[in-house]
Structures are given as C-alpha cells and as structure tokens.
Image (cartoon, rainbow, N blue to C red):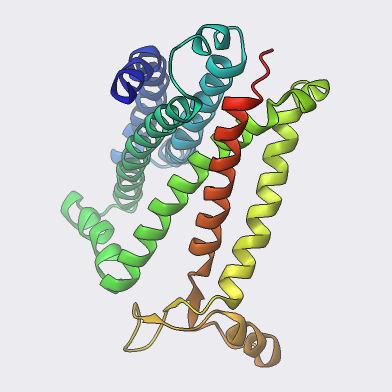
Amino acid sequence: MLKTLLGEQFRSTSHVLAAVAGVVLLVAAVSLVPAMAGTGGLGSLGLVLASVLVACLTPIVGVLLAWDYWQTMYGRRGYFTMTLPVRGRELFAAKVLHALIATAVAAVVTLGGVAACLLARGRMARMPLGDAWSAVTGAVGDAPAGVLAGFGAILAIQLVVAVIQVAAVLSISAESRFQGIGWGAPLVGLVLLYLVDQVVSLIGMLWIPLGIRLSGPQAGDLVARGMWPDVVEALRTGADPTVIGLGSVATGAALTVALAWWAVRSIERRTSLR
C-alpha cells in the first residue's frame, strides 16, 4: 500500500512541481546569459536575479509540498484521503517520503544552479571558461575531505529532519482542540517549531561531546567535545572556535522522532477536517 500511496503522490503533484521548477530555472538560465557573455551592468543584474531564483528553488518546492500536505489531509481533499483503507502512519510515511525525494531533487538542482552562477561570475571577471570552471571546482577541492563529508552529511540530515518536522507540526496543529485558531494554528505551530529547534540545536552544539575540528592538521576529524569550551575561550580572548559541535544532529533527531510519533497519533486518533 505504501508503494501505491507514494505513486499517487507523485502523479498528483509532479505536474505542478515540474511547472514551477521549470519556470524558475528557465528565468534563471535566461538571466545568466548576459553574465556568461561578460556583459557589465546587465550581466550583474542577471547574476543577482539568477542567484536569488536558484536559492529560492528548494524553499519554493517545500512550500508547495506543505500546501499539498495540508490540503490533501485536512482540506476538502482530506475527506477522500481519510476514506482510504490505510492507517495514519502509512499516509504520513508516504507523504513524508514523497516530500523527501522531491526536496532532495530540488536541492541537487539548486547545487547545479549555484555552480552555474559561480561560473557566470567568473566569466564576468573576463576569465576563460576553463579557468572559471577550475575556480569553481578548486574552491571545493581545497577544503579538507572530512569537512566536506561532515557538512554534506549534516545538510542531508537537516533536510530529512525539516521535512518530517514540518509535516508533523501540520498534523498536530490540525487537531480539533486547535480548530478555533483556524489558519493560525499551523502558523503558530511552525513558529514554535522554529524556536524549539533553535534551543535544542544550541544545547546539542554546546554540550553534547561530539564535534568536528575546523582547523589545523587534524581539520575534519571527529572529536569528543562540544563547543562550550571554545565559546568560553572566544568570550574571554576573542579566539576563533576550533571545533563546531555536531550534537545538534542528535537533539534534532530526538525531537523529530517525538514529533513524528505525535503526528501519527494525531492522524489516527484526532484528525479534524476543515
């Protein structure tokens, strides 16, 4: 059943997502043409516009998916969804998995767009195409492999956490006890989610003994310490931190599991359609 639900999710949203992403990427590509040609003022304007569009692509996809989640679960289309002979956990899993795949694809496309913008920036500086591309790849290649791998893993985990948490908060805020707030319920829920996320992330980064070294010959190595000693030293002497804490991954994962459990419980026992 999960496979069937997932397939239906792609069929119902693919045309909208493809159309929106296509328009964004087309406008960004056209905007980069003057920059790639080395044009001055027009090229700079086009580069700024393309950079903004590329940076907004993944958030736009995320907003569209969140809207679809709300409409198909708690809007008019929710009446059909809730008649399906499946458990709430299967509905939640299918929608979250679909959103993860869609946002992951958008994130990969965004990385490609960022590379294109950096390439256009090099061309505006009158660099040959090969040199401009070497500058783009060299900026990545100069970073320690461990640091790149660590940050890549963190970004991937944060994407998964964000998708699950947003879906969970939308379901929790749809409970009947919050119905009096109307559309304000999911908005308040998302604001509270942001605040709670910041607090638990800060706690994890500062005090959970897991981090990655940022500088020196051991840059990129994992270390059994948080950032609190570095923060104290920075406040005392102004020194730059030598370690970035990774404990926020653990605290974020724990919060995500708790929210997912709460969301499934809400779908199966407390669903209130609008």
